[in-house]
Length: 333
Image 1 (cartoon, one colour):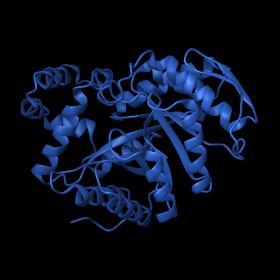
Image 2 (cartoon, one colour; image 1 turned 180 degrees about the vertical axis):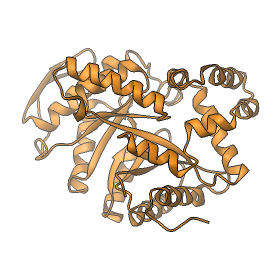
Image 3 (spheres, one colour; image 1 turned 30 degrees about the horizontal axis):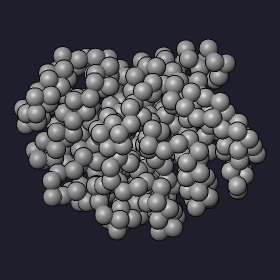
Image 4 (spheres, rainbow, N blue to C red; image 1 turned 60 degrees about the vertical axis):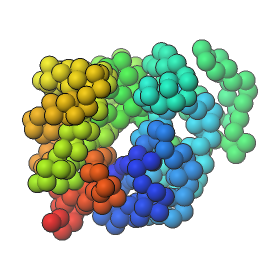
């Protein structure tokens, strides 16, 4: 199977089901199992358990917030999981959502581009240098070292990026970025941003990897499954950070109407405003669409959107279906 991953939010399943899903994903040929941390289970503790229980699959974060941990803690956590996985770990960081960072942690999401720049410079410095100093806007490290020393090999770090400024920063300083809604129009636009920003920084644009959360319908033939995806898309329409992709993709006015309905608290109306065309545009419902993403050079991280009461079953079904789409597994009935 082409390089492809599968993810879940850490709160969606209990630990035993998460371990079973990771094992199922490994058996289906997935390259990596990714965790998204919000207000559920703490990601690095869970990654440690997965590293021991399912050593056959590589691991990653997609994403953890760089506001909720210092860069030094991120470097320590990444180094620990890197060791537990024998080097089969990738770190994905991002700002995180306002509900998680501002309401949950009580932190202001100030200057995310500058904060992410400071984060990667410190994380990279601690993981590659015997002693490291940094005098930044938020953090001031003085001749500091990780007790176990720098990593003996390179650890890729990716930035969650939706808006052009974050994409440009990723092109300059990260190994790549993790987007969502990988429409053909958005991917093309981001590739142009990468080309310009990486070249201006003296970097080969081909070194900048594009990954994407890839919302995938568990059962495109079932209306309840499609409606679950409508709700999932409406949730993201409610965040203005997604409106740039919507505009690029030709759905700016439609997404704005969903956003306005969501802001009134009428989530049912917002969900109903997500049309079939929006489901087809912003999620994977066919093998051809997933193949298009792979062929565009994007690494898809399959993002199951489950029906109520079928959360574990739909995660497994979605992983199997996406593998089937790429010719990896028997047909899913």
